[in-house]
Length: 249
Image (cartoon, rainbow, N blue to C red):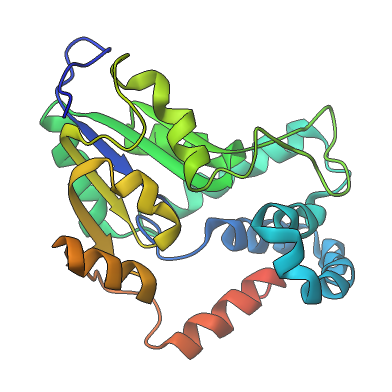
């Protein structure tokens, strides 16, 4: 295990996922809802999305993300940035898990290096990270050159799993090798997709974990927290997500 820190004044690490870990929703759907309410004609993106749904497994999470993001097609970069800022102002902090925000603050006060690492686009992840006072943030990077293109390119891969680890690597000790546990490190996530990130942490907390993550984490002795959700059941959650995708939430 390694304790040496590249960044002076910091001791230990606190690594956080975002969607359904700090925010009780997928912020990709929340931001879609936010945009579609302001530009209702963009709801037509669903007509492009539906034909691709049968090919979800073939396209993978990254491919489907490019398809879904067509609701932003042809939006200019300045408008997109303005929406991202306004969106973050709208959901912070009332639209987030208060208990988890307090945990973030505790790690900051303890002097740990805090990193927000999300599969959602950095377009708004960066502003959420700033609001919460994270030292660093990472998200999926979209190629936006003046305007958002149809099926926008993802730079450096979809920010999940091993990609997340690669993005954080510059903050770890030079002698650190993949898979080794960082001393004084804490991890937080809801998803089994984050197991590579959690496995390098000494102490992990699962937030409303998926069944796969719960099964894995229980074998490891990881903690579970279940802050109050805005919906009462999986069905009501699914309905809310569907409405968000249409800008009707």
